[in-house]
Length: 270
Image (cartoon, rainbow, N blue to C red; front, top):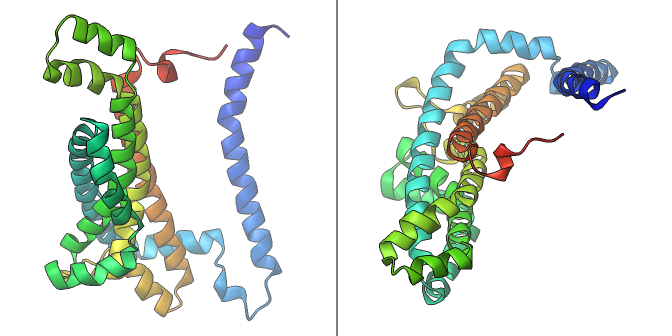
């Protein structure tokens, strides 16, 4: 079989395999449900029970998703802006990185479950606390990737800029920042994965149901306490979809910024 014939078959298989894997996982899910004893049956709802719960709880899940999505967007947006600014600052010199990097590590390693009660006392439960928790979860990997990209610029190009007496501003924004884009978008993809998780965790720890608009994390508390397993699985599925939306958005931005010149997009496998 020629390479020209193999390429379309490979594309067809790459499109069909995820679907076939999904069908197999659903069938395995039904098999596990059928194998449970009657007293364990309520712990694992079948896929159609989860689907029914999704439609039954649709309005509640929609409002909760909006609440969680708002916290995720705000926290992620602030993390993008501040991580970029902090990355520029840390890239100025090794002494700056040595002075501030350990404190960023301390911030990252401080458990959110410890920070959350402090935030509740400082700013109160709800969207503000959820936004800050999301920011804290997203910030560190983004600033690390941005800083690494800024200090990893090709030294030959840096020497060329300095030979032509480019200013420090020109070196940073005309050379280092464009060269750091792949690192920056890698950090954004990590942050986009963590943002919905951070918002849901924030809802779980510091959220509330003011005006009947608790987030997805708050709903998990309600549904788990009431043993509504179908609704609990539906909430988890909505959170997963929210994460896919965030990652897809960042991937689209990454493609727009890099596809014309970076190898990760411009090269195709043969």
